[in-house]
Image (cartoon, rainbow over all chains, first blue to last red; front, side, top):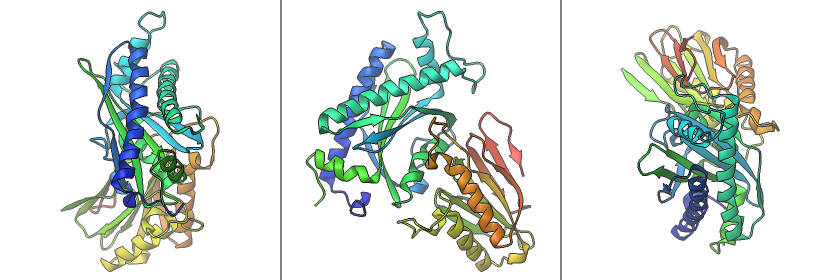
Length: 214
Length: 160
């Protein structure tokens, strides 16, 4: 797929890609609102075309501790979807989810210790978000999209953000991350949903959106 | 004193006094080379094991095999001598664990192996390493004494 160079995408094509973020993340924000019983809002998506050296710092600080949930996208639109949560947000999610249950989830005292149960619940949140993001995308494009089981890491933002770029680095010198931030008005919910299509996905995606590459 | 940040797929060499830094190293490997006489230091932040069979291989700093050669050349230009150069390694973590461990999931481990093979081929001794595991690292490499300070989230800071 040498025909796709991210730096050569037209503004029309970038707008089309941004719309993908808008529709996908919008649907995911709705799903998250229902799950958390709180109104979760989202920012306008950013289409970030970056060189590798700039990836680590794309979200404020490369060393910031975050929870990252990574899901591999399979089918017509291969790539990754990465869900990044600030540590406090993840803890809040867990408390919220376990509110009416006998099991208590989330631990704030020992900063980096989530239980296996917590991790599994967070993965499931990631699963639901990725599922709703991609369902909207599938509906929009008519493409057949399915996902892998999620993987989770609690670590520095830079280490987590760099991982999906490695696969892309075999075929290009820059990457395109479609990043959508979300937040909740009063509380401290803050996170990012990032769609990272593989290079071979672009031709398919842009064609399905009617913004094909000639 | 110069402090230079070395991002993914980048490499830098500098004369004493200076510090080379990489923030949030995950599955990538930081290759730190030190000339104990001239105190020239070099750091490469590689993403992939090998440049062979790769379509986009024009950036030498991206691959273990080509990055080490390129980094040595940059160090020689600053007055380093091969016989005095030793190496330290950090990174190569497995950041995510999936049930099906495909090729790309083990990329950290493969990066470390390829780095060691290339260093051995070139006759450069590895003095110390902090590699593998499942956590990210921030590294600071000092020309003062060739020490490599490794910060790890939720784990002790190590100096090798």
